[in-house]
Image (tube, rainbow, N blue to C red):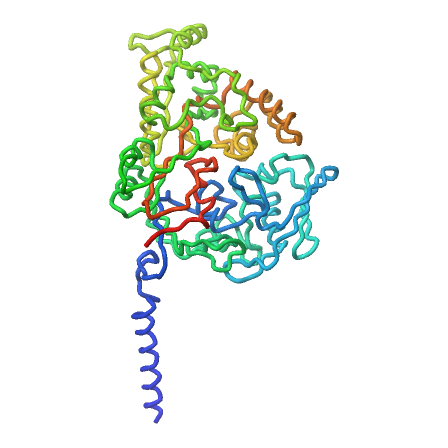
Length: 524
């Protein structure tokens, strides 16, 4: 009898396993992207990720659709309430009071509360171990107070005109991360947010899958699943779009050209704040000793030719890091337009003379420096090579190093990409203020610091504009970068995909295309 009972148990167990394997796919060993699922599936071209934590990764698409902030950006790029139901600002006490949406849950079903907001902002302002480029955006926060489960106050020690922009940062779940090391916790690869889409799986080096959040507090997306296919190489992306393996991809201007007259695809052209520039590492001897060359070198580059040929006209010449901001840009500053004669006069006035090989020399030193570019970024490689040719024609040697990874400790310069698509503080202060959290180049200029602080602390638009005008005037005298070009954001999609809106200006790497993903539909 005991043997019969035991046999019966084994039969039930084996049958259950077989049903699970055969019918539901659980434990099948198949990657998440290959398991059979109902509904619409969008294949999106993506770069690779190491973390999906929004505090550690604030410039990629995935964190924005998995996590929500107190605020979010609307179509015009203005911060509006998101997890917050309302926001009140007392200018006298520099205190924001947020009433939170009720009934919001994390993707694991736990309730979202004001404690999560305090946990996230305390992490950004008080953690001794957090290493994140954005921490200087929050340094004016002096206290975060929970009034009740649905009300939180954020008090500042000094004004920060961009604070509502910075409170678009994804809020983290306290119940999963309290007491943990945010830099190393597995949460970074298995995120739980409150956003439109939920994390579903990660095939390292291949893809990351998200599924729509049926319990989302706002409009639930129509597209059931999005597979972020990791395709860093720009040419490979174009090939996979052509073959139908990708439904949507950001392509460089050259690769986009091949799709513009093809009725089997649809091209979306976004305005972006994404610029390319040569960023010196100011800790390296060449730039410490020859910093005065940086504005002069701008005259040696025919940037208009780069835009017209390499970018096929999809962009414009760059001269300022906040150039695409309609309110705060100062078009009156020196744009360093191509003028080889001006370059010659100014470089020789500094004591440089051409050597026997046609490259300028001074005190035994050649006017020669290197620029690193990552191997999968074909467009940047092409930009660097064209710039090198143009420099050589006037007596400057720029060596292009194609590398797998960047190392700011060793590189002499980098073909950088950055953007300030929203408030100008979010593309200037952390990058260029002395010692700031995102100042990778170690640039320092006390005059620039003064204007950046004034612009951040001025709550009136006219005062901020005056400060940013002064910032850009100083930039023209002592630019941190050799500015090259702004890029348009060119996306190629299957015609089965609809609902994409080009209304909003996108950020670095054209991030932000999914700002209205809840309105997208995909025919099957």
